[in-house]
Length: 381
Image 1 (cartoon, one colour):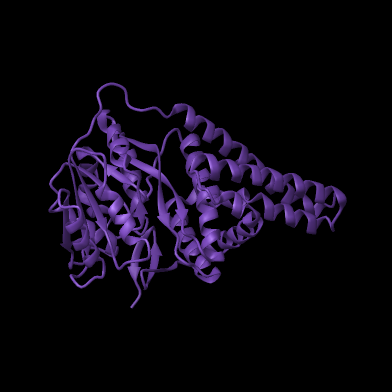
Image 2 (cartoon, one colour):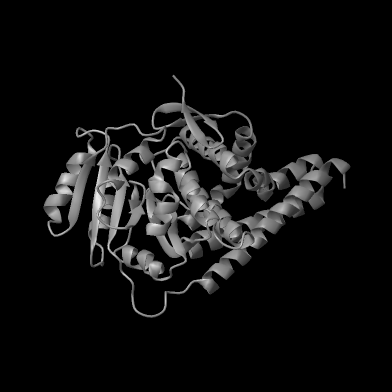
């Protein structure tokens, strides 16, 4: 073995260990999940959905929240101005679901650097119920969603409930890479962190369900008004106060935009810099989790020696198995097998994005440019 190949071999071994831990963490998650015992718990809940504009799947995503098997809940859609195209969809929902409490709330105030949290703060003022559920505007949910999420609050120690998600509707190469990453890498990272840290210490924007205790802890969301990763910050603050952040076995769907490869890389870079600021130690270690690119580097460093090619074959097989389990069994993404051949490309790009994200603090979000410092957003004029 050429000595230059030693380092990438070590990094590749780290990647293989990460895959093994991810599979073990997945097994533990499936073993531990269980429905709350005793009488069903269905507290009244306010769903807060900050929206901006529309996309091809907006109506279906919105309507899925209006057809829940749940006794009492309201939905508040928040828009920055009454002229937002989403307002017309909300009015359509009000006509088509007359029995459901659906409100449109105009949120013109700028209460922080994050437009999303600013809207949430204004929506929270008019929410009727002490339990609140927040999710992104592109999230589509099944009819039993509220019942399964809210039943966890039967336990007094539960402060927040969150969910994994899978992508859907990817029609471009960039979109398929995004969908594949969500299914095979993001979910694995969440389950691994949950296992290694003895529980979930953050939350995901696909679902942020909170009880009165959690809302009190985060002081009505004001404390996260300047953070880009508001979901992460909310979960972190709740966990630090000793309440449980529960990862439900419910998996929701998010619509994948028609990303070009460049748009996909920009989106990944924004996410990478956000995670770098939010989870410094965990993000620093992500570089060694990409076993395939390190396996390729091993082949190059070994000048194509036979053993290096055999090593790469083992690495690729391990990663494909890991991706298959995560995509098909954890988030039940029906496109995982079809997209599996893109894993080497996706992982190589992910390593490049990780390297790039370690430097710089500029992010592009919602057609605006921000500087990111300590996880907080600062507008660039």
